Length: 489
Ligand code: CS2
Image (cartoon, rainbow, N blue to C red; front, side, top):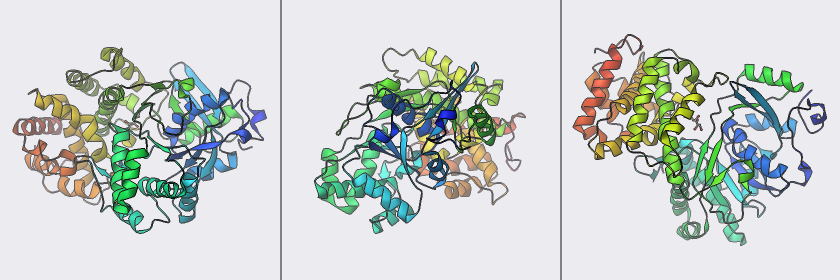
């Protein structure tokens, strides 16, 4: 029997479920990018608000790419299970915060979504669309005006498909109807995510109507947030195990760790839920929280993912058993700490010890291949930002250089033999550069020439280039690391 409102009574008593009347909840948050992460993080914090009796904050969840999530959850009345797992067991809860679901990529879905966003009932539009969903050139901060999806949204305002088109056209409808704007809440792993979201939205709006762009700049709030919860893609084994415990069928449960953190800048124009009920923190120190998390957690994750891929480690926990990787992570954290401004009250040493425990979580099957995706979108804020700060202080960065070299080997392996794929929005450019030569110095120079990734400064920095090349060659010669056999090192 399927999990649903009607079947909730059959759940084993120890499994948490909504304690509020879902039919009385108002749908005032539209969430774009309905994946596992949102459901394990912001939706769960919102569930705590609803459970505490404030029914003004239900979520309408929208998948941006496909209707898969809606098709899985609609027959369940939007209900789904979160399994929080750790070495000492697991806790299951059924979450009711998603009170409506709007489709996928079809025109009809997007028209419905635009209408809901334009409606006065929508007070917050939150986002988890990954780095590439903002269509920003991360090296320059410019909007990718020529990206086909952006060009299509500028040409077809009635059926926008990107977050930028949806937000700008919904705000235009609201402005025309005299409805105040919603707050745009970015929950993606980008530094100053609210500021980047604002820059992308305003740049898109300028192409539509400069008055509208000015109105957005003057009236729309874009709070910054730091989000953290390691949430791998759900596997069939997860599904089978959870369904057995539920005694009901949940088509798309979420498995996540026990740790959760959400730090939010308190800047909302139409009110907000009291997410502190779920453990969130409102703070003015977002930049420090974000950069510590992006560099220490995500930077280590990417390092571990590329080296894990090169050493045949399928999961993060497996990679944490390899001294080659853990030694490198220790060195990487040292390099980060030298330029880190931690939030007040946080001891970076404790934070890093906690990260090690989280990465070793034996109950999470977090695939290195998943984290290795979209490197071009992740390296700038995770590895290149601390690198640039160290360069400015004339400090060498062998660990960061090794991490970048590991990404380069990962790209070269994907380019040999030609025809292989790389999951990255810039795959074509990366593979073209990675496949041009078999000589280490040339490979490093070709890949460094990717200006959207490395900017104008890094390729011309002789000391950094030498450090990177040295680490690239060292990895090619390391017998534990399987690099492309074509490389003549
Ligand atoms: C990971 C993140 O896939 C990735 O790039 O580094 O999704 C990471 O698990 C989360 O940011 C943890 O909060």
